Image (tube, rainbow, N blue to C red; front, side, top):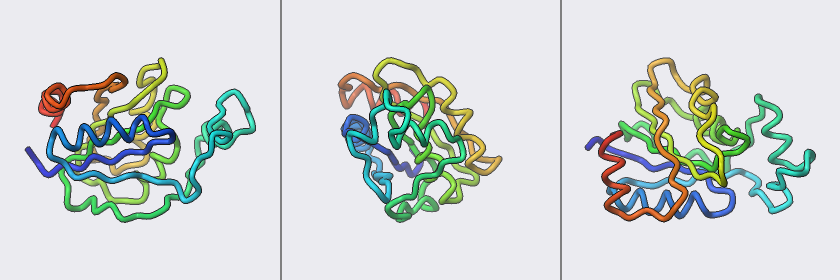
Amino acid sequence: MSKTLVAYFSASGTTAGVAKELAQAVGADIYEIRPAVPYTQADLDWMNKKSRSSVEMNDKSSRPALADQDAHIAAYDTILLGFPIWWYVAPTIINSFLESYDFSGKKIVLFATSGGSGFGRAAAGLKPSVAADTVIVEGKLLNSRQTAASLKAWAETVL
């Protein structure tokens, strides 16, 4: 396997749990994508059109600030990139992350958690945020508890 990083954003902890299990199963390093201003429960209220997440997701140019830019992307060949699905796409903080680093020549494999929807247009929405020679692969929804063996088996098919 190539040098792999599991990078993830988790607003409520669900994606964080999956990312940690995945990193351990495949022997990858891990990096948490954190917003400069953490999301509160009120920020995540998708039924409130004025909530922070609703405002960000309705503005495709929104790029929430990152808490840091300490992911040493140059050291990795493959990035397993995880996030919750919001409105059938990745949260715009994922675009912030992708636009903060040079992913030229790298492979990004997406994984996500979702309360019910699929990947939707997530991969297409992220492609403009990386170099033309970056490969983005729609991976898998990892909603339920996965075994280390099943996570490793899946990762071996995409790495």
